[in-house]
Image 1 (tube, rainbow, N blue to C red):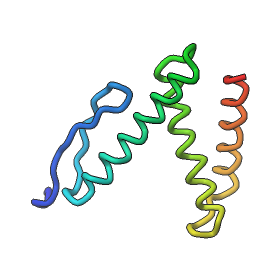
Image 2: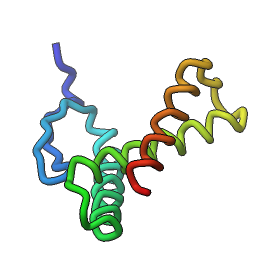
Image 3: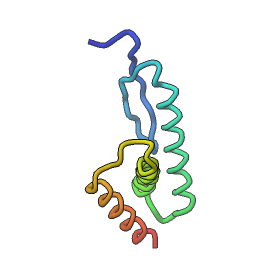
Image 4: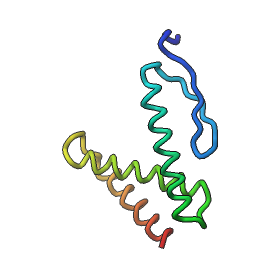
Amino acid sequence: MEGKNNRQITVLIAGRPYPLKIKDSDEPTIRKIVKEINDKINQFQLTYTNKDKQDCLSMAILTYAVDLHKYMQTGQATTPDNEVDQKLSQIDSLLDKLLA
């Protein structure tokens, strides 16, 4: 049962629509994050013109994962377990090879 403070919105990420059910109070934050993701995708598309939109989306999301990981390592949040840390390092290495 949905509360009356919930609503459905559709956001566009990399030109694709994604319907979301959200709390009204979360909409400004979600819209801001969607804009930031799309801005990052556009930056990667301008920087790496030979990469397709999916590659740029992956790099944008990886940027957020790395930022989150760094944030968590500062002790301001729970530190991720070793497996997550290793996976992030592997993804980072793969992207470095891909972009080289």
